[in-house]
Image (cartoon, rainbow, N blue to C red; front, side, top):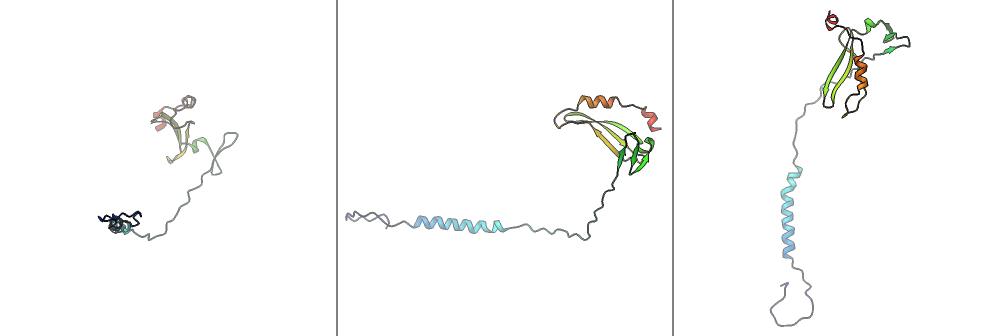
Amino acid sequence: MAFGSFERKSSSQPMAEINMVPLIDVVLVLLVIFIVTAPLLTNVVKLDLPRATANAELQKPEKIEFAIDAQGGLFWNGERLTREDAIARVWVVEKPTTDGVVTSVEAFDGAGEVMAMFFGVRKPGLPELETWRALVRELPRRDPAAALA
């Protein structure tokens, strides 16, 4: 045995044997754990995904150029416009946010498409600048009933 015997011989040499039973027990337990968990690691979910049948056609957005010259003339894609032709309606919009009300000026063409949106400079977490709100308040206003007519 590894621990010695009951004989009364006195031996001055240390025991040089290793008890192999605990080592074998640990190795067998690790082997069983590996055998049980290995199939779980290789298990995959199989999905039957649809295949694309047609090529995607990417449409390039239409390039629109809007310019204002030094004399205040308006140009849409290089063609001169009068102010009445260019902008059909302009609205001042106040949108509530977590940082307070955000004021914007939105310009629409005759077809009801948005031409431009103007916002005051601000950073998230900070309220809108009072100078921007004052500038928007100074814009000329028309009677809403007359604008719809």
